[in-house]
Image 1: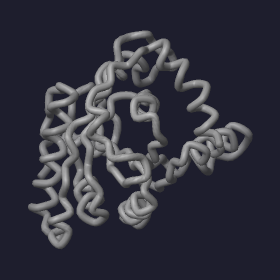
Image 2 (image 1 turned 135 degrees about the vertical axis):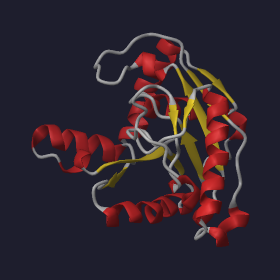
Image 3 (image 1 turned 60 degrees about the vertical axis):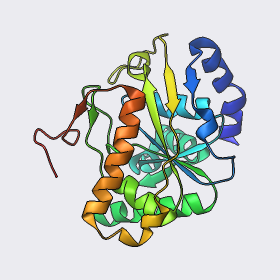
Amino acid sequence: MLYRALQLTVAPALRTVYRPAVTGLHHLPPEGEPVILAANHVSFADEIFTPIATRRQVCYFAKAEYFTTPGLKGAVMAGFFNGMGHVPVARSDTRSAAAVIDIGVEVLADGRTLGIYPEGTRSPDGHLHKFRTGVARLALRSGAPVVPVGLVGTRAAQPPGSKMWHRVPVEVHFGAPLHFGHLADRERSSRVLREVTETVRESVQALSGQHYIDAFAGSSTTTA
């Protein structure tokens, strides 16, 4: 209900103000068919402009703290994220982190659109960082296509650490779907997982135009 209300009020207002340039929408499957949207992540605004561009509900993983914060503020926050269809994840709990893949597969099995940021966190410098292999595990286990997404301008629209929004050009580019279902029985291969992940990363980079840093975000060294 909350998502529908925002779709009818906030989304049209943001489209009018920002007029985001959207390309490649034809690459998305019909609504009701599962799809993984794998995007670069440079701003909180990414989770706003992607659904605006797709004109459909996009389910994201969200920190569990957003759902458990006490008090009125916590209740409002939990209501918002629940209403948007987001899924809580306790990132510090390795068991919960491992269960994220299973949760994602369930979301996709319901024919929903799952949005993920393979970098694992927001880019600290605006560059594209090394992707983690969760996107590959999701694709192989679910059989859902991966549509790469390149977001441009969202960092300037809503800079990290700032509460201010700026009216700047924003672009959302969708690439051709990537299919990896034929590799489903190779999920245990770290080499295959990395190859699939790199295929997704290269596609996202081609759309976002970012400089690539071969290290995980927050890491000062290159990691295999």
